[in-house]
Image 1: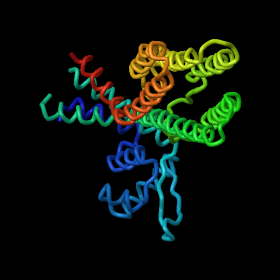
Image 2: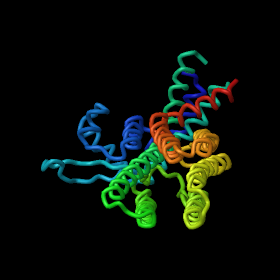
Image 3: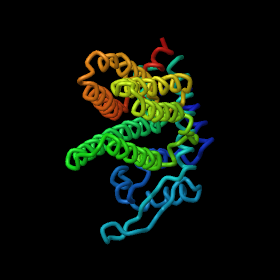
Amino acid sequence: MDPRILKELAELSRENKLLGSPARLSIMMLLYFRTRMKFTELQLALGLTPGNLSSHLKKLEQANYVRIIKGFINLRPATIVEITPLGAKKVKEFASLMRKILRDVERS
Amino acid sequence: MSDEDLEYAKKLLRIVNVIENYNYYLIRRSIGLIFIVIIALTAIIIATINMIEQALNLSLFLSGMLYFSAFSLFFLVITILSHNIAKIPEIYSAKRMNYRNYGGIWMIAGIMILVSSVIIYNTYIPDIYFTFLLQVLFGVGFLGSYFTAKNDPDYPGKVKEEYLILGLVLILLSPLILLYPKYAWITAFTVVMIGTFIFGIYLILTASKVFEKWENKNGSENT
């Protein structure tokens, strides 16, 4: 890949460490379109291990990007992950920054 | 830069475009749904009152009162419930939309319909003029929505030309009512109701247009 794109994307990742991780960005993008998902659904969609997903979700929850709700669905215990307005705002901001970089790249 | 990189960048741009315009997509679908709900409920109300009218053989005054009460109640309920019908998750609203500004022209059209019905049905002016005015005012309402959308880049759902087309269809077909007074109500209901129903379905089916528009714009910028 073009070193210039890599440099700019690396800068973008540094600016937002949380969304700079591909796994966390994928979690946030999925939640952006679905608003809320079951833990198992997220795990299946992303192919992550439960431990790995838990660790990413903990970081996102600490930053108030997602909300983790423990509840029951059809009388079965379920963990539901929901995106917060702040999380959605951050996804949009990240997307805008990405667009800016990619447009420059496409033009050059 | 290699072709592969460019292709990758384009794919990422498409994802970014979907993220940035997703709220418009949802709002466009909601607007379509509101129009379908309004038309469906209007049809039910008209059919029910028509049946009551025929079964009880009501006088013109009583049936007029019945229509007036039913539609006043209906529009009150729709105004209150439209926020819930068109509710999109809070996370997608980039800024709080003031729907009152967008509904202003419809409020004026509604008052004019009400005033014209009172004047026409209490004077010797033929009833078909009310039917004619009803269709024209619906057209004016849609044209008003078009001009509001034209001056507001953040207009909910980015619905613009669609309002213009429907508004013009309603206004241009309104002389048919005066030309064929015998079929005045049938013409008005067919044009207004079927037109608006198709409009609602069209908005839902073409909701993904909000993404295409951006891509075209982006493409023309690059050329």
